[in-house]
Length: 258
Image (tube, rainbow, N blue to C red; front, side, top):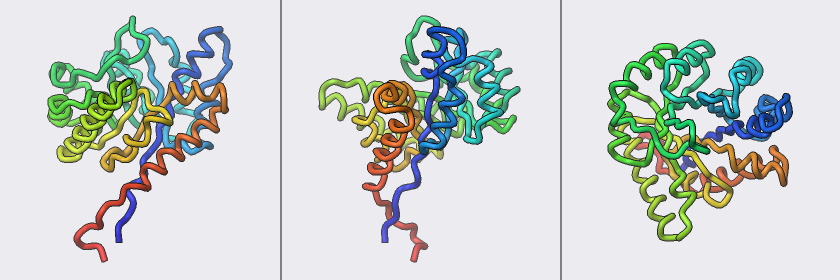
């Protein structure tokens, strides 16, 4: 008898709750309150990106998130000395290393793990030695996956922006195939595979159906939908879309299964 693919974790990124707060100043809306609501609505973890310019999430947010939520915290950050110190101080469950440009509106592409090997190797080692799970946010590219393996990062997060932004069906299909192949390669290299960036109700299903993807991180779309349906409603629907797509995939039992 076949079994279902493993549970697909949903990480909710709360950055843009902080963006709305910071647009006017003050304390409302509170990203920590959003994190607690996300937990109640079915999130498996919380993601927050602490940028160099603190445009949304702040140091105080990270302090409160580590103290007040009982879900795994995934801290997105650039590989800088300042951020390493913050991660080692707060010891989040996970750190996802991302490329960062001050002028960009959002993360524009994947980390060049292959080109930054010498810089990333000791950085990853320090985080790992502190018991922090390290993830590299990379393009669905064989060279970057090989580099992640060589760097001994246990997790990769595949950038799904090109897939989500594709306007033509043929282009979206091609991007999806790239992600599927990359997820399979990650599994063959012994890497845990996550995915994220730009995922919506429309686009999440095919990504959620990839059996070796173990976690999705979604934020901007959910915060945008919250304007119309409330944050809990948006997260619950996303959770349902993910579970529906996951349930369609059955995996064969191991050789020793009865």
